[in-house]
Length: 381
Ligand SMILES: [Zn+2]
Image (cartoon, rainbow, N blue to C red; front, side, top):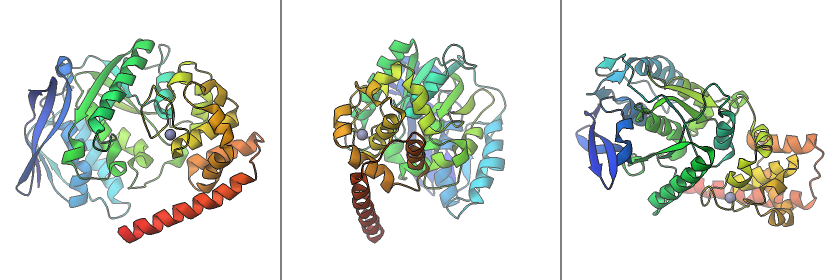
């Protein structure tokens, strides 16, 4: 049994933290989600929702009944039980359905009616901002940064703070507000981040039911590539996101109607993206992309194929890309079979973008290196 105690507010280090004591088989820890003290009123105190969402994968993996002392939104429990858990337990053996017990409420949390989305500077995130301007159904009011485990390593809180600073600057330029949620998920929940990150991001948004009426989660895949990869929770976001809404907060999966290259094509005509596009896995938005990591290689090659890479000279070293183009394209070729790379290659074929012969030599080298890495990981595992 996984017990979630009544949530309370604790004020520490200038933060207001929504805390709940969590007990599993007699062992306890405290899970918290914190916002700057001035934003304390945004926290949905007295709702079990964010804690249930954050702990759902662990409960389903271990087969633990979730018992909540605070009320949970009725709509959320219905969707998690009848839709999400049923579906996840029907694919593979990782997850099984578990009972969720405790009081329910059907009254919406009073909110400020805000519309939010996460900001990272990546193509998916920027596309959501681009699509939700003043003339859209849900014009954005807030950009969010969630420290739900994406920032890793010893200085992960410093990286979180840097990401918040970049979001603040971009928000100022766009006339938007910001909200930042820090958590102790990284320390308290020993899970592989890719397996569970959608649950954690939704948990952070559910902690802000005093602020948001609508939250737009940016899709990393287009709907045609919906699939159940239980080790990449974003692969089945269309299901998870549709199951996360409560009586007062509606979630939408934003950008699943288009492919990644189409997002980059649309962004290429949107000037703010020229200095803010940041797909890089290193550093943070607002700075220069490294140009050679897996996301940089893919997105820079896509922009090159679109003929718009030079518009991004403020964030990509375009001369460096051209100098190492054979290697970057070789990396894309080596990742054939992954739909995001296949899209880039299909675009290059459709636009008659020549691939230098040396790219095929690099492709072989990358493939060999990837095979060696996966062999050594299998041995370690
Ligand atoms: Zn990079």
